[in-house]
Image (cartoon, rainbow, N blue to C red; front, side):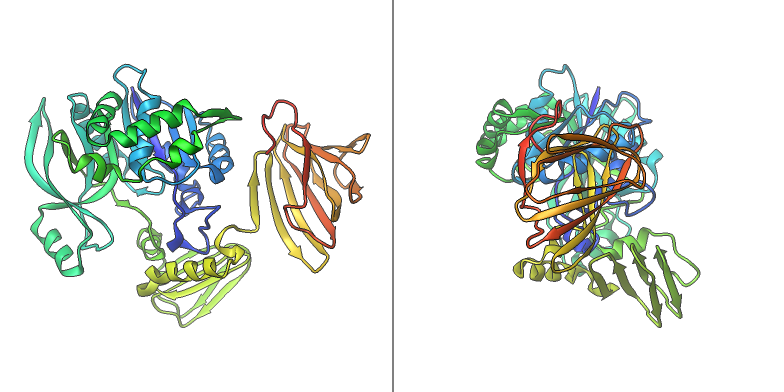
Length: 474
């Protein structure tokens, strides 16, 4: 049995304004109809012996991860919530501890934000990796480089390792990110691969190696799992224990020190989509070599990436540029300067701007809300409640609310009343009156919420009780 371990943490700051701290790149549909998390899971479906995945993510992204897996019909083995980021070694240790009781289980560790164009070649590499993992090797996947890249670490190839008709490579050395001249020399030599951050190993073996090479990490993770608790569909790690865990990558903690490491080359159109330039490279281009997504009109534009999400974007005379529009921000940059987007994100963070954290759409366990327009004493929101979803009983001290049902059916509790509202019907919730909203139907409930009052912030809420059967208050 192979258990995919999907590492879905991270924020993807270089893909701002589409990627935000609370809506990171792995949760976005950057290439194709599925999000990167969904694609990571779906590309494994046809591989034999693959079990349901373990997804490890930040607790702030839990509802996004759960909803995206539900949307593609995947019931995960577990969604494990990290209270703080501690790099990849603790994440692998937690997964290995979780799988410790499963005889001969192998872990396939995959970041959730990678693009792979040729899935059949990935599966071929997995077959080789599985063979060597079953023979007590720790496998890393080395991407066959297409160009000299300075943003990746490299792995120097060692001698061929032959076994049972399969061939892998011993690892001569892990190399830090090089400068341009060194990267060019690496690629020209043919002796190096990019370090992909993808791994396969038996759970028991990697745990034993970590106990030998990084015992503090294993001890902290074992304690965090033991002190963890179930919360809805999630497993929350013990916060104090995990926060005390050393932060380290699986490369530094284990792979660079073990004598069991083996590299399997991967030539499958891999890209970590770490910048807008990378998205231009993998995107489908028109005759002028533009990648265009959304409502975009161009005249005399070449070699550019233009994306619109909420309105018309028109461009004239651009060459080698990036233009990305969202409902609350627009990015314009030369393609050669896209790595500097991180500086903008740092500046937004220093100014405590909300655009660095979230979009106007906020995901919840019951669905999502989306801000449409806001004034000094009012705000209009679009509310989507999934079938069976329920918003906790609550009240507000500073605002009143008016709900208009656009589609679906709403069961509303207002004070001591309980009402059933259908399409085109509405209800007013005065300030200070307790209320609850539920979708009792089988189709999505959509309504418009109009807030009025002196303070409209999300923290003007008192949760009075949790909805039946949903666990702690969302």
